[in-house]
Image (cartoon, rainbow, N blue to C red; front, top):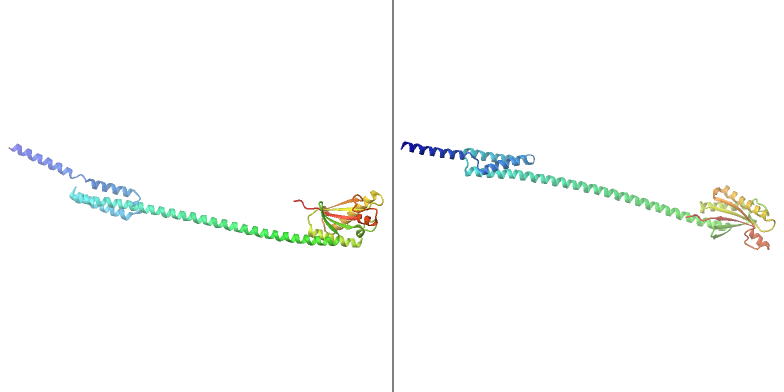
Length: 289
């Protein structure tokens, strides 16, 4: 009987010990609460949401005290559940704040890019506008210069037509001056009146044709020896060239040629024809484009 009683007491003690040992194991909710807090504390919550993380730690501490006091009780599980939610809330708040900061940074970057693009576009527009204005100003100046040149050329042509016969040929503008007006018979020295006339011709050429090349041809009638007439034609062409150069026409623009009797424009058998053949032709050659 005594032995049976001792055995029964031993079994009760073992059962009680077993139950006591089982009560030292934390409930799954508390284990999850601890893990949730560890995850939150190792994440961005420490920097982004420290207040929420502190609340989560306080909730976990409450659950831990409940477990220490009451073990695996419903109250401990409830406190553990609250601690889990607080840790998750701290982590979620941190992620939200990070996302908001990233969004704000992205928006600032986009604004900076847009501002830079707008500034660049405005700069390009300003440059284009300035270039356009410069181009328009240049075109206006070129137009004004062209109109002035055309006006000067027209005035110069009118002056030349007043001074001699002017006609347009394939070889250029031909100004014909009578030899009788320019020289005495068989002479190559310019008459005083001829000097004044040639000065006006030079002024008109400078004003209306400042860059064109000029050929001066000395023509004679057919009376007398041909070589004499050729030499006379050359001397007269040279005399006209010298006077134009003295008046300001560039010498390298002018070529003088003695044609003599070789290209008559009238019949040498009549006095009138021979007078027409005694002439000096000034050919203003067209500019090459």
